[in-house]
Image (cartoon, rainbow over all chains, first blue to last red; front, top):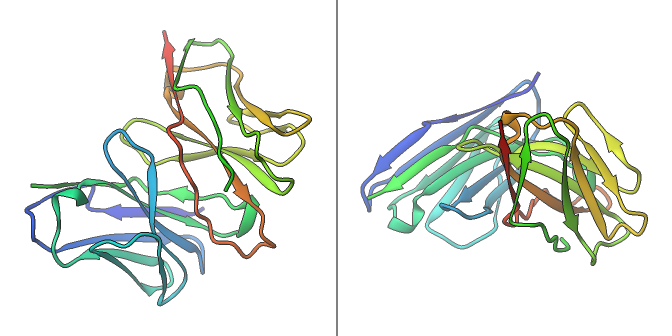
Length: 114
Length: 114
């Protein structure tokens, strides 16, 4: 069976510090990978998606970046965090494309920027 | 993706059926109807999806109106663990090549009373 891991589970960082969140998927190959962010009391916003190693597409301009160094590893980074980067970060994977696609989400990382 | 409309909140008693409605009057002929739910402090979880016919799985049933302009997620016997935010999402079928941007609205907050 497939499993998706995210770490750390929670993180408190000062403004201006760097960020690195990691997501790994087990039990599947060549998954589509996604990073979402959920601000407090709001819906999910897609940040990045990747259909293969080294292939990253960004949905919204921001001070965050993503990388996919290995097939089942997806990393979210920032060089300097802003207060507005606080939120619940979720990684997701899928196999299919189009209307039938089902996404499977990780447990998330709760980030607080102070 | 086309827009969906859901009630902000609903309440149910434990072990009673729950019918969660979703309106999608602008749905196109190839849009799939997906339901996800998000338990407190967790990532979203896939529940069910369908295109035209009613669908059943171990978690729930999906009833789709004949004109496809609305659908209903049915939890046959609500438990306390079903308390979550339920999201109704339309996913476009684009020849199987579209990436999986899930557009989450505000969803319906389901409260289950013991």
